[in-house]
Amino acid sequence: MPDAKSVQAVKSVLIAGAGIGGLTAALACAQKGTTVTVFERASELGEVGAGLQIAANGTQVLEKLGLGDDLKRIGFKPDAATLRLGQSGRTVFSNPLGASAKERYGAWYYHVHRADLHRILSAAVLAHPSIDLRLGCGVESFLDDGKGVTVCLSDGAETRGASLIGADGIHSSIREGLFGKDAPRFTGNVAWRLLVPTANLPAGLIPPHATVWTGPQGHAVTYYVRGGELVNFVGVVERKHWQVEGWQERGDVAELKRDFAPWCSTIHQLIDAADETTCFKWALFDRDPLPSWSKGRVTLLGDACHPMLPFMAQGACMAIEDGWVLASELAEANEPAKAFLSYEEKRKERTARVQMAARANAKRFHKGEPSGQLVTYGPMWLAARIKPDLLNRPFDWIYGMNVTRS
Image 1: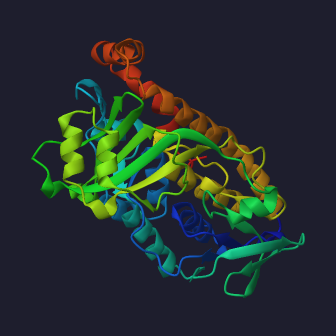
Image 2: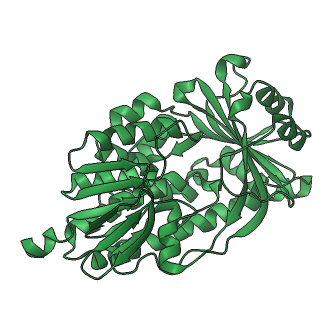
Image 3: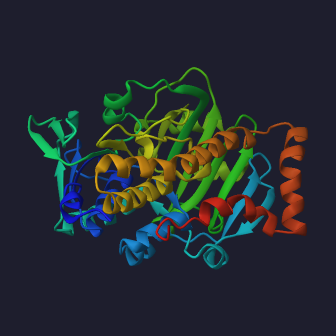
């Protein structure tokens, strides 16, 4: 057991970034007795983003942080996970979620608006006496002298802590400071997202499912958020000539409609009913797993160390898991560097596996020829009718993990 003096040396942490992962890490660290300062470059925490899927593995952590009731209030519980053919609308399979998934994995599967999840996390952070959230000051640079970490902030100030966590997203300045610039590869895919008021749609047009619509050179995902008030739409198309990474680039609904012209009427009714101000697009870039996340008293979390394609709907959950595991390791260690190496050891294989699974789905969802659809989706259709449990097993290793028990 570490002595009291050595433990005290790791009981302060600086976090760069107040996104989902950074705020989760702050709450988890504070719950375990650590004093936390969070730096966020944005001057306010606003209505940013669209839908997120929070499976049982993420729900478990949020409940341990005391946010279970808030999550229930903001979330939507889908009845099933469904695969449909985008051009015909035909259902390949529909696999139960809801109470069935809760019984299998120990917690609810939720759909949430990112802004709603961010709001309940930030409210908990602001209410916690051991967390100082500083807006309008991003971390520009840092220095680890072996005894602590000094950060230089965008407002000109300097702050010192025992350790630093880079939770500053896909374009992380902390990652660049540790390992240099990354070299992402354009996948040849562009993603669209928009939100559609449910009141604008015919009743029953979109079922209360997490639905993947597959098609030629593209796919789409639909599900409800904000308690069913909105439908979240994400559409991915193969395209070479537009490569702007970042999910806050405005999109043109007319261009989106052209991209999905061959698709069924349900998709077109959905797009026609959209709030055009919620239409965005971004180019999807892929990155290989990092060989290391940490150096000394500095480490990375979430998209800063394992950005992943959105085709497993696990990006937010992986960051949430990271936050809990990292806080647990800091609480047990006698120095941050040891905690960070242990954290890496527990997280790298799992997050890399999710990254690779998301990469594989990018190809699996884009089957246009009947022969390709038959080979890929035929076994799924058959399994759903003969032994539906076979469709759950590939996800057990993801949803069945409860990092709060490890």
